[in-house]
Image (tube, rainbow, N blue to C red; front, side, top):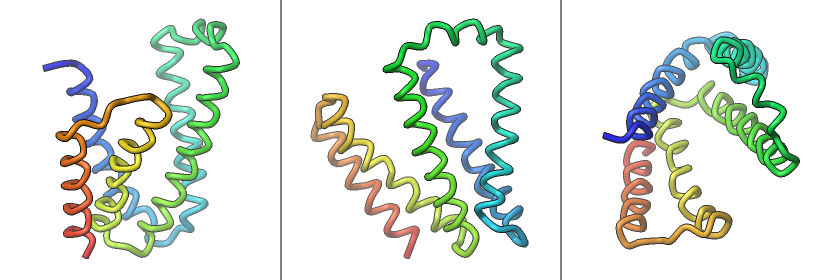
Length: 139
């Protein structure tokens, strides 16, 4: 098994835990405030990971292109978290998560145009199945 597969599975498991704990935390808290507090703690946590891992020296290797991409990713990520928590505040966790996971379909489409990835029959069928699964869970 490739390491990226293990990391992807760990990402899925921790995302599931984040959804459940986040839903509990949103019971009496504004989603925008919760997203901001969450982001602040994530920053502190990641800064510690960077320090402990000795990765801070790598900041000098960031060129403008990489920095712009990282900043844009941060903005889109923050918006994603905000919209996710707004949906999670009132929606069922399983339904919100199912709709959120349709991001796979958008990633497939965007990766064709921006990353020149090829759309194979297998990937297209997988995207359709993800969409069908999300609809079934969300209804």
